[in-house]
Image 1: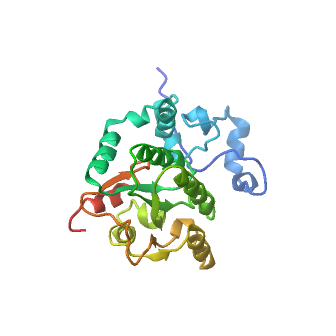
Image 2 (image 1 turned 135 degrees about the vertical axis):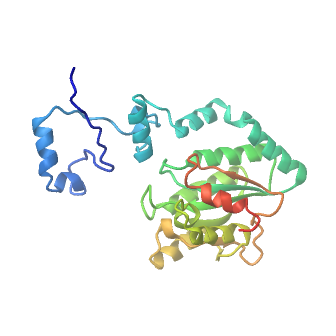
Length: 274
């Protein structure tokens, strides 16, 4: 009987790059890894796109890689499944969403959509937010408010404005108003740093933040102060009156498909004494 042991060792963030000047691993001195590759059998795995259950061209990430390795097969991610449901029309037939929108139409209360506005593809997809706005428009809802979290972590630190401009373009064809903009550093904490969550909570519930005169101005002002997308401090539409703040009886939908980052802000929103 062969009692030799085999270890599965995962080096998070270690990969085979394009061998350019920005390829840190290729340009580093790595004698141990070089020796292993030179003297032992090895192979390369594709860690992005359809090979790991993501859309073609979509970059992979730690969670996706671990999930596929653990399963030993391709695991189709939430991003891919939701995208398919939108294409097939099944998304618009989801009973819980239909109930949310029909109830809002009946009561006249606000609908709030909160989540990461980004094409990073790790936590959210702009296509999912756009689908929700399209659905709200089909229900002839006008009182729809977006509480947008800026990224800058899973994409370029100063790429946010382009995503918001695309969102505004979609809004003109459907419905919705951007109620608040807050960096994910505050809104998407997952390590019990409740003081950060409180900043996002106050923007969404109490309308506390700088006045949001325009999307471009919000990003320009932040960048001028040395603040990149991830750390943008709250901006609130019409901060003096805050018509988009969340109130009793309103509907709130999180459009992030990953649940780890929205968990704390969701907990705060459902606690009377927060």
